[in-house]
Length: 108
Image 1 (cartoon, rainbow, N blue to C red):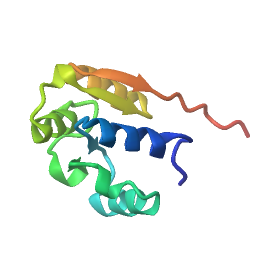
Image 2 (tube, one colour; image 1 turned 60 degrees about the vertical axis):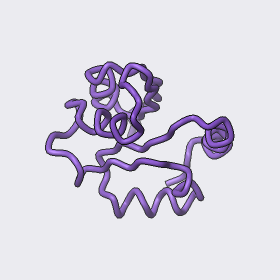
Image 3 (cartoon, rainbow, N blue to C red; image 1 turned 90 degrees about the horizontal axis):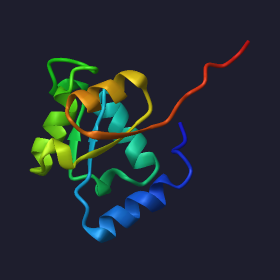
């Protein structure tokens, strides 16, 4: 899987600006660590919350609320970048602002 174009530079800018960063995902920790390491971003996230860390999956906001708590920031101060509709709902359920990326279904 390739990252969205520009994401690495964007994350680097967040790092240099001192913006707290977390990953909150439905993926497994192993899969996430492999992906972040592959694209050189693993060291840039202070908090990682994966499927193994929560009791309820998205659209329950638990994964995002745990990430905010790990960063010690209020959920209303968070912006979530999300690639699924269920994730958008989870972030909104957490009281966070969301930037979503729409995936079009492939046509046969």
